[in-house]
Image (tube, rainbow, N blue to C red; front, side):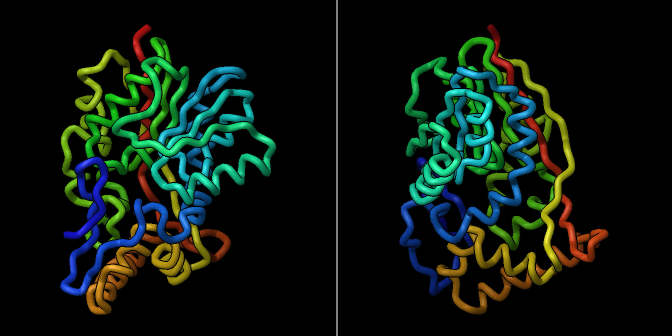
Length: 280
């Protein structure tokens, strides 16, 4: 496997004899993540609803990307900070906040070493972000560290038996090594073990979700043409290796996609919503 390094861990993409290093300082700056962010917006709405930020409360959005959850939280009057390693996504998030007239502090930062003091936030959010970072133990440690006593966090991720798990062989967003990490985020028992060393109470709920498109071909084109990990993989792989990735993705989507009432398709997924309450 080849990949990019995240705090000493590799985020994997398939290897190839003709692959070359990615020119991007952080993989998620590649492609057009805003397209995926629009797909995930409904999950941000759910995360903010569950977290219930109040006006004036300090709120942290970990792996903020283009700012979905941060913007929603800021509309409650909360004092919101978004942190991410992807500078281009942070710039897009700042632009969205400015357009909406929202004052949000977007910060370049590592989820393994958050640049905030202990107990800085009443609420923390993360939607399909913290769960994709290798080294779940360190991410969980930092999340708990920056929450104040009595603070509440909501982390949205994916079940290990979800479509993202099945796609991991061909669609290297979540590498098999990351899913296999124990403890990790990808099943209720893994989450319980992940937070067992910490002074928190954890609840995990599975909720349905789906990626929707006009048809299977449109969904494949959207993923391969915009998702940062696939765009990065295309740049690394020779034609034969890329064709194998694209064919595997296409076959998996064909197997699992279901028709919608409006003539489109829906690719169902299984989400895990993790709610964390730090001891007072």
